Length: 633
Ligand SMILES: Nc1ncnc2c1ncn2[C@@H]1O[C@H](COP(=O)(O)OP(=O)(O)OP(=O)(O)O)[C@@H](O)[C@H]1O
Image 1 (tube, rainbow, N blue to C red):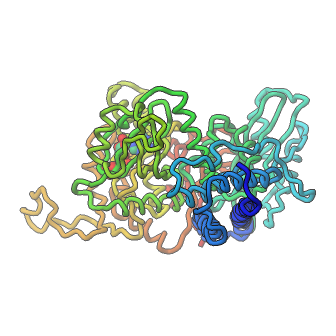
Image 2 (cartoon, protein in one colour):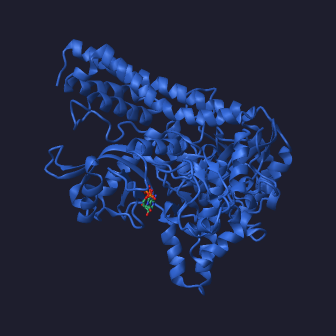
Image 3 (spheres, rainbow, N blue to C red):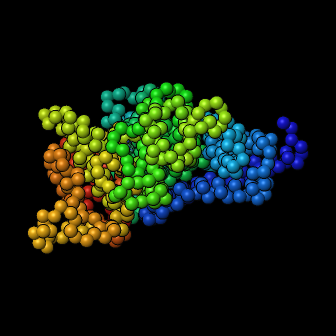
């Protein structure tokens, strides 16, 4: 439809206002991410954590600002479809030379749906698929570093190249001993190559900016030898304030997946061309969806947008049915999944049976707390959706009955968009990665019987992991509240991760108490709690009966984690946090540290099985082993 001159100018101005809004957003996002370097250099750990938390809010603030401007200056909500269509076309024109076109498209969607959602439920104005390609995008700024850089060492002089690489980041810190670190990294790289001979195409490629998270900076790249590519990441830590060293060399897709896990805080990286970073990272982790990579880089809305596209695509190419998730049903959350898709969908129930004493708002606040908190590799990240629509034909009847019974307020079964298909529309839902519920995982080991060595090893491993998960959460100031096995899941890497957030509290808000001695025989024989209990009182000695009914589990647990049943452990951790200690949680075990094993991958596992399991050595070794996570103050 042709627009008159006034409307054409309006559409053009709307597109400009929209891109101004996005550019302001990305400038602030990038500046905050770039400042991570200075915070790392000056050991400003509290500042780093604060910035990580606060950056999460940036997007919604900028979307609201832009929405207000469009409504105020252009009465955008009242404009006819033709103006919106033209505004979108103009916007596409503005993205042709843009360096973050995919993010700008998502921003357009966010602002547009906010303004138009009341007027048009079904609208054609958003970017359902990308209009602008991000392929081969690179910086035009002659002074800027490209997204990644290549170095061409010889296999025997790898250490010299690695020293050059380490220096190239211009960190305003002194390396403790750069020659030693470069040598260690070169040795580790060579040992990864094994007996492979050097091929003509032998190079090291590294992303041009470091990845910052909490107390660490990570150099990410790959070694290429002929057709073989070895992904690697080098964690840099401070030995003393201002003196840094390379703590370990992480290799291969599995190590990268742990580094970029959905259960950790988002990285801060200064990226002019985020799609270039994503593409490079994807070459290191081909099985990780791009949605999750964007998430890990703190670009959560892009992650969510891509996830939703992946979900629609998956639905289009699968035929299985949504079903109630395996495991023990929640009292607060109704959980379902699609067997062919590796995520679960969680809807808050309309009411909660006793002893649950919470509200929908409180549950949402707890999920929000987790989103903003450092998840330390032990809490699953969630994406929050409203008005999620699925074809009714993909739901089994038992699940619909369950939704009608427990979450009717969130359920609509209708053909709202008038396309002739009945849909299930959920008012609000969380989506998170699917894991194997720990109770089911343990049951498999029980079913195999006590003589099955593999099952015994599996049992021991997850019991150790379970205790480690709790200790990590506790060190991060999180009291999980409900620690039953069913509230934890086991990831593909055998890691135990917590996912039930409705009862979590800050550790510092809890009061850990010893069970008082019985006053008389009546107290002693009483099956009831005879002593007074205040709201946030916790009695660690009472955990045992709930958790350790199975003798095999009990035996393994008591061998590794008996301290969890003593109030002293909890109290002393609480005191450390109250003293202001900032602990960090590193995405690799103690056995991977150069100073622990000389940098040889796989060595050390035999030295101390418990430490080898541990990904955060400091926190459970607060007394003995050298640590990677040291208190900052
Ligand atoms: N990420 C996940 N992967 C696999 N299964 C999951 C996941 N999250 C939840 N579940 C399944 O759904 C069940 C209920 O989930 P969740 O613990 O979040 O609900 P809840 O209502 O908060 O539980 P509770 O009654 O213990 O408070 C779990 O016991 C588990 O079986």
